Amino acid sequence: MKFAPWREKASCYSVLVPSYMARTSGMRDFDWPMVLVLIVVCALGVLQIFSATHDTIWQGAWWKQILYIASGFLLMWLTARFDYHTLVGKAYPAYFISIALLLVVLLIGKRAFGSTRWIVLPAGVHLQVSEFAKLVIVLLVARFLVDVRTDVLELADFLKLAAMIVVPMALVAKEPDLGTSLTYIPILAVGVLLAGMRWQYWAAIALVALVVLPLAYTKLQPYQRARIASFLDPDRDPQGTGYQLIQSEIAVGAGGTWGKGVTKGSQTQLRFLPVPHTDFIFSSFAEEHGFIGVIAVLAFYFILLMQVVQNGQTAPDRAGMYICMGVASLLLFHILVNVGMVIGRMPVTGIPLPLMSYGGSSVWSTFLMLGLVNSVRVRRFVN
Image (cartoon, rainbow, N blue to C red; front, side, top):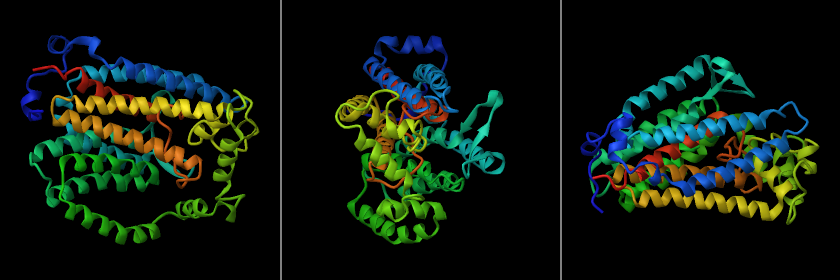
C-alpha cells in the first residue's frame, strides 16, 4: 500500500459540508456494522445503569446516560464529516490547548471523591478534560509519526514523542487520576510498534522501566499503594482497601450461568457492591446477566475492536492507520483493565468500561474517537 503524506492529502479537503459531499462517497460508506454494535452495547449499559441505580439517589442516571449516548452519536457523525487530515494538521495546537486546560483543572477544577478532575460548565455539566486529551494524544501520535517519515523510528524521535505524552500524563496523575493517565501509554506503544523501532531500543526501554517502576511506586498516593496491596491480598483488609474487590468477585460469582435478572442481584441491590453504575458496572452486569450475558457483551466488544482494526487496515495513508490503531489500543486497554479489575486480575483503578459505565465525558470522548475512525473509513477510496 502506498501511503501519501498527510500534508498533500490535507489540501484536498475542507471542513465545509459541500466540499465533503463532493469528495466522499457519503453516508453509505459509514461503518454501519459498528453503529449496530454501539447501539447494542450502549443499550446494555443503560439497562444495567437503570438496574444498578434502582431506588437510589442515582435512579435518574439511566436517562441522563441516554442523553449522553444520543449526543455522542451526533458527535461521532459530525466528526466523521471532518477530514481527518485537517484534524491531524491541528494536532500540535490541540495538544497545547489540552495542556492549558489540564492546568486549569488543577487550578480551579471541581474537587470530588478526593480528586480534582472536572471543569464545571453551564447547566451543571462536568467536563473531564483528561478524557478528551485521549483524542488529542491519538492525533498527536499520528501527526508526529507521519512527519518523521522514516522506515525505522530512531531513539531520539521516540524520546521526543514520549516526552510530549509524559506531560499530560503527569498533569492527570497530579489530579490525582493515575488510571486515566495510564491510558495514554497504549496509544504511544502501538504507534511506535507500527512505525517500527530496533529491538535494542525496546530492550533499553524495558530495562529503564524495570528500574523506574520501584521508584514510581514510592511516589504513589497512599490510597494507590493500598489498592496495589489489596490487589495482591484483598483479605488483609476486607472491610477497608480490600472491600471493593471482594464484593466485586462475590457479585461476579453469584451470577452463575444465566444471572439473577434485572434489579434482582443481591450484591447490587443491597448496595454491597460499590459504584455499580460506573467503575464496577461489569460486576453488576455479571451478577444479573450471568456467564451468558458476559460472553455476549465481550463478543460485542470484540466485534467493535475488529471493526476499528479493519478500518485501520484499509486506511488510505499512515495517518489514518495510526488513528484507527491508536483508538483500538485505547479501547482494548480500557476493556482489559476494567474487566480484569472486577475479577481480581488487575488493581482497582478508576478506568470506566467504554460505552457502558455512566458518565458524559467518557461517552463523548469514545464517540469522538470512533468518529475519527469513520472519518478515515469514508475517505478510504478518495484519490
